[in-house]
Image (cartoon, rainbow, N blue to C red; front, side, top):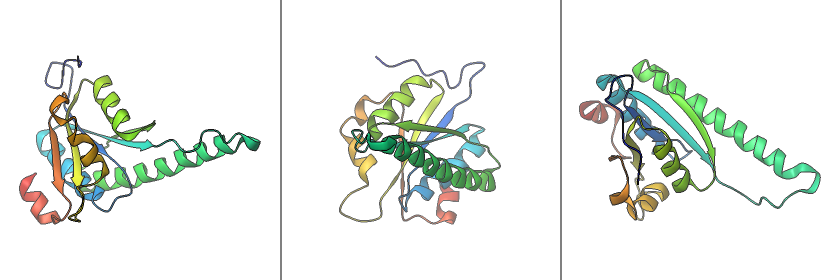
Length: 164
């Protein structure tokens, strides 16, 4: 059973959760969520999930070096998108880096943070797949404790402004 959402209770503030990655459509999710959060006076939480690689590499601390590099890269991506959010909506987003399988970590974060009110994803623009996260979540979407907003990756800034 999932924790009760407290987004709109006294002392709480709803948050839009955006999954940050290097996909071309990620910016569309960030754009819409930023504009929507500003309009609804909500917060924005960005998560970047570092997926596990070969954890058996222990030779000369290679695994720890790889882990540190992955964290540095994740921080750089989050910093870039945080600047984008601030420029678009005047918001300073919360930032989280998680390690593990993306879907599992997204679900765990939603479970831990009772102020998350909406999960925002962007759909890929190709016709073969909506994107790995969107495709992965469709199997369990009916069991999620929050609504999911899927932003079409082909929409322009102007089109997203009219929807936010």
